[in-house]
Every structure is written in structure tokens, then in C-alpha cells.
Image 1: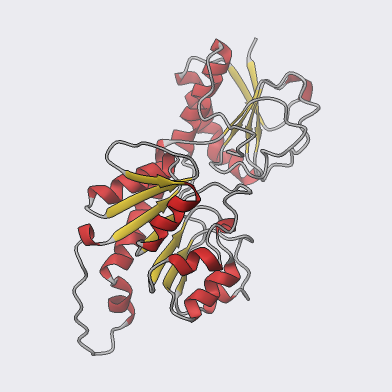
Image 2: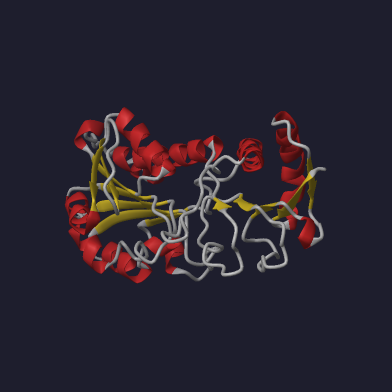
Length: 310
């Protein structure tokens, strides 16, 4: 009897994922019937994205797990009708994409590339940046994405300190934690990168008070969650020069409304939520492995802790 897998994501995603999922199931030796429409009481697993019309999980009486295509689960983790295990997406393609985006923008600000790109007016502007070893970078968030980006920056020689809400000991990385640790990390961070999840404890983690701790002219880079930053506080800090520039990939409302002041602010770079996209081929293999594990009675990969929200 086949394993029934419901693909519950945006309709436009179906042609993109159908073949990679089918191929990954076959490679894993799984007899899966993948479909966009199945009777709820016959569904064993749901491959899910919050863009799906499926919001009530109570009719899925045979459901064994929900396997998210997204790294962020804040739009589903609080759903009271979801009573089965929920796994978030962690895959090599997504991690590599985030690492490349973070490293690219850290280097851009470290080297002062914007002044050369936009300043082609015949003026010879010569300024020599410090070496990476003399540039302090704070990585707020030490999950899979934060660790990968922090290690890549440390590998280039940057003085990287990672911060998390609870203590973590990571080979080759300096770390700190808790409220006092956050203050210590921010006070010396010339560049701060946010890769935290969206939880009640992390929302507005950069507000007027914490932004004021940063050295004057510090750079803020946010590819994590739009809710991590108090927008009004950031704009005020940019206006008075406390923050030198903000490069933002995520926002409370997406697409970012055309009238939002971020678009026109001279010290803000907006990128359209492109830092880390799920790659269908690699994501499909993660989904297939979790279904294999579920069928074998093994623990699922990347299982969400509902009490922590991620």
C-alpha cells in the first residue's frame, strides 16, 4: 500500500517540486503516492508551506507528520489543530545560499564597495579598509544558518562572535549568550548580522536601546526575520548616524510596500527576500529522508520544538 503524500503549498510550486520529490522518493526506496488533492483521511504526510490553503489539520486523521518546505515555521507552529510532529526545512542548498548572501554583503560593507559603485563622478576617493581580522562581526543566531555563515566569515579572518539566547559551545567560534551577553556582543560589533527565528523573545531584539549599544556607524544586516528589528527605531538611528547602513532582506510586510521609507532612505539597501531560497532538488531529498525515518520509526530530522517556536 503506497504512502500517501499531500503537497500543500502554493499552486505555482507544484510544477517545480513534483519531479524532484518523485525522484527523491524513488531514490530513497519509498512507495509514495504524491498528489495535490487527496481525501484528508487518507493522507499520511503533508509537504507543507504556509502559502497553502490547508490551515485546519483536524480532518487529517491518519496524518503522521507535517514536513515544511520553509525554514521559518512561525506561521504554523501555533496552529492548535496541528497535533502531529512538525519538521522545518534545513537543507544544504538553503544553507549555502544564505552563507553566500551574508558573506557577500559583509564583504561589501567591510570593503566600502558602495562608495566606489555609486561614486563614479571623477573624484579620486582612496580609502583603505582594515583587514578582516580587525573587523568585528556579531552573528545573532546560532542555528544551522547562523553557524554556517559565522564559520564562513571566521574562515575569511573576520573577528566573529556568535550570540544565542542560551549557551552554546561551538568549536572554532567565539560565543556569548543571554541579555548580558547580547550587550557585550553589540558594544563591539561593527557589523551585526541577524539570523534568529521569529519568537516572542526575539521580536524587536534590535530596538532603540540595543541599537544605541552598537559603535557609531555600525552596519546592520538582516536576512533573518523582519520582526527582529523595530523599524521606527532603526530609521531614527540611521537618520542620526548611529547606524551607518542597513541591508535588509526580510520585512514585516512582504512585498515591502512601495511607500515604505526603507525604499527611499539613502542608508538602506532593500533586497527582495532572496538571501535563502529552498532549492527543490536538495529540499526534496530532506523530505524523502524524513518520510523514510517516519516509516522506520526513527526520529525525524529538524523537528520543531513547539515550546520554543522553532
